[in-house]
Structure formats: C-alpha cells, structure tokens
Figure 1: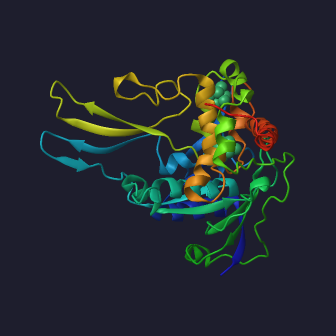
Figure 2: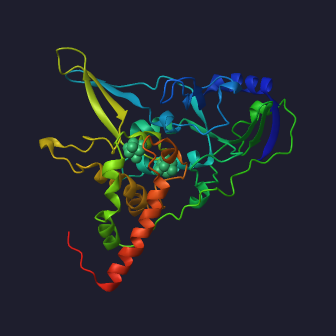
Length: 353
Ligand code: SF4
Ligand code: SF4
C-alpha cells in the first residue's frame, strides 16, 4: 500500500501522542550548549514526544545506532551461582526516524550483529526485533555527504516516509503498519524523494587482491596520520556503521562474585582497545589504528559479507573530526596508492614484509 497525508504541527503532535502509547519514538534532537565548545549545540538521538522535538534541518552529529546499541547497557546481573538477564526497560516497540544513509546502516549493523560467524547477538536482536523506521526526507545535503556514490541514498527499510516543514509534515505510508493512525486524515498526493546527487563525489576504492591489500598496508600514505590524528575516537563514535564495544564487570562491593556485566561503546581508534592478556597490543601507533579503521570499512567487511563497504557515506566522520582529517580525502589517497601498487605489481617490484 502507499497512501499519503499532510499534517499540521498540531496534528503531528496528536499523532505522536497516539504513537507513543505503543512506540518509543527516537529522532535527532538538539541539545543546546551540549557541543564541543561552551556555546555549541549538539544533535543526538533521544526519545521524542512531539513534532518540535525533532531537529530535521541539520544532520545529527551522532548517529541513530545508539538506539539499538546503547552507549552503555547492562547485559545481566550475577551472583556466586546464578545470573539474571537485564530486562529491556521499555516494553513498547521502537520507531526510529533516520535518513536514507542511516537506514542503510541498519543493514550493515544487522550483518555484524546477526550474521557474523553463525551466531546472533542476543542483546542486539531483542531490540532490533522491536524496531521500525521512518525515513526523513533529505531536502538539502550536508557537508561531506556522499551517499549517492555508494547507492545508500535510497532505502526500502521504512514504513513511513516523512518530509518535514515548519508548518507540519507530509507522510507517505509504505506499508500497512501505521495505517490505523491515519483513518481520520484526508489523503494527499505525496511521494517521499531521495537525494539524486551530492556535491561530494567519491570513487570508493576497490582492493582486488590480497597482494594489493598487503602492499597498501605498508604504503607510506598512512604516515601522516601518526601526527595529524589525536586518536580521540570521535569519528567512530559518530559513525553509523562502527560497532566496536567492550564489556566490563561491575562488582557491587567486597564480594567479587556479585555484580553486573555491562557493554559499552568503544573505539578501535583509542589506545588500549586491542590490548590483550600479557599486555600484547596489535596496533601500537595511531597510524596503524587509523589504517585498521579505514581498511575495515574499505576491504575487510566486504571480504566477510560480500556486500560492499562498511560505510553509507553519511559524512559524519568528515564533518566532526577535531583535527579536520577527511575520510573522503583518505579514500582518494587510497585510490592513488592503488595506482602505484598496481604498477609495481605489473613491473614485478619485490615486496617483502
Ligand atoms: S580521525 Fe579525527 S575524529 Fe577520528 S580519531 Fe583521529 S582525530 Fe579523532
Ligand atoms: S565511515 Fe564516515 S561516512 Fe562512512 S558511515 Fe561512518 S561516519 Fe558515515
């Protein structure tokens, strides 16, 4: 089915009130003075209850992944001889507003948490099964977006497509799921649109062989990031496809057998993330960590899932790096390095690592 409606702000508020009985609604919201500097705002996902709660004019700084993989969550509580699963606090289903790139990131998160090595992540699955999506139409593009270069400018994951305006919203129903909420509204002509072209066009690199990959790993292009990147992890926390987490046992008192296990968002960019027993660390330098992050997105994810990059071109990492390191410029440098590498392979230049 596909029916469309035009709702005023007051009608949107009534809709949200009715939806909130059954759904926890999450959308980008503006947090005043919550940004990097004292008077900067930030935009992040929170539960909303009315239309004006939603910040729809700007891209959120943090992505919607925080709804399905919270920054910190208790997985279970334990005592000496038993454990108890932590409940999902809200029994309602979940409705998440996101842009096409964000909705496409859910498909990548699903691969990582549900299709990785034959095991499903139980705690991701129990939230994911409750989740439904509303597409936020992009009427303008933001700095660093390149979804059209990756085909992530379109999606079919949504049940509602929404175009926002000051005086209300136009909504297209793309399934029957929410039809019961619109029986008293008059239909209108509206079809949600997708971005067709970005100012930024990215030729996403394709590494074709293991030898290209190995040579790229030791290419000097990575050296500059030892000095430029401060390994703050902001790019990965904001990224809608990065999924690194860590688990911590919290003990309630002197008895080390009673407490809870928590999972928290983490970053492969931060020193110590890959430290193992015996203090062995796989990636000691910043450039090694930056290279790992980038090549996971460009190469390793595709090697495992055969579905292309672990990236939807949302542009958040480009826009929010405090050191102005551009991910899209890094991709261009990889393309240039691959030209050199392919020439070396053709000429039989030896490679010993
Ligand atoms: S690339 Fe930028 S945002 Fe990412 S860790 Fe380095 S300095 Fe931080
Ligand atoms: S790598 Fe950058 S552009 Fe790609 S999904 Fe992550 S934040 Fe968005």
